Amino acid sequence: MRILVVGSGGREHALVWKIAQSKLVDKIFCAPGNGGTALQAENIDIRADDIAGLVRFGRREKIDLTVVGPEVPLTLGIADEFEKCRLPVFGPNKAAAAMEGSKVFSKELMRTYGVPTADFKVFGEAGAACAYIEKAGAPCVVKADGLAAGKGVIVAKTVDEAKAAVRQIMEGRVFGPAGDRVIVEECLTGQEASILVLTDSKDVIPLATSQDHKRIFDNDEGPNTGGMGAYSPAPVVTPALFDEIMKKIVYRTIDGLVKEGITYRGILYAGVMLTKDGPKTLEFNARFGDPETEAILPRMTSDIVEAMLAAASGNLGKFAQAGGLAWQTRPCVCVVCAAEGYPGEYKKGLPVSGLDAAGAMQDVMIFHAGTKKKDAGVVTGGGRVLCVSALGAAIRDARDKAYQAVGKIHFEGMQYRTDIAAKAL
Image 1 (cartoon, one colour):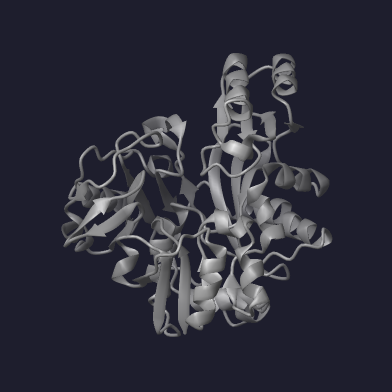
Image 2 (tube, rainbow, N blue to C red):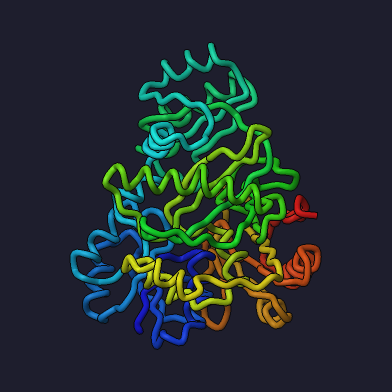
């Protein structure tokens, strides 16, 4: 089979790495890819949001399966366009991807079908939102409706902070048209968990649980990022709690989409807050999480291409009957190495050293996120530069190994959290 992976981050490198292990695969392309994907795939100079260019490439190269990593092409309808050309694609269509592309859509779907989530109100005008915040008080959460690269959620501790967030989003246009509408919702407290499932709308197969770390600094301080590290499994999600999440959140959501006439094929990701009143949904994503993927896929022992083909073709039930997904018991911890200044402004083109030494460690995987190949080496090319993942006999072992590997890597201004997976200990 000839596989095309769309995207350029750590998630896409992890997908390429896992797909390369499949006995079904002869050739992998990655568009546009990064310095790491180039090790196992042929990087193609087509942007992830150039849908027409990707379709042309898929037709010309007779691609047997396209795997879409990022949310932007999904919300632009890449799956619809590939399906029109009878090119198999792993990822939800445009209508289904609205679960991530519009927080208003997903929140209203949750309200309609009884999926537990924070109470919320939607506003299309800054003055009305600020007046509501004055009345409702703080803390609260302000969310831009559309895509904002994981940064469109502001947890405001005071009324003034919340009103400033509304004005930044709606008047300052910091997230562009994603801020045409905002959601103001109650602030939930508790531990977060990431629940990812494979679905074709008829059947559901859960992936291993994981937990992400969104804030830039230790102790969950500083601004939100795309994710600074993850670990799998998440011990806080007990079997009983997992069953409750599946029943009240995952199944109700997929059933709700079906009732709305929407078929969902691909990965559905629920960000869940484990509150004293039970699990509540923070958000949905329409694709593999990043960096959760870099902590989950090293634990998967199944052929991921078989699973993706089954979901894409609506045959997930048969795949489940044949055994479904299998996992090793060893946990995995992933630590993100980011550029100085991220999630704000940062430099690019800085040389990265120590990758060979870190990658030579047993049970350590280096997934490139924001890198580029230059001459004989690798340079930085994004805010999140590398994801360093390690397997261990227990979470503490995996964590220690990941940080030992991080210690071998260097680029100017490299920053990373030192408390990834501490909650699990």
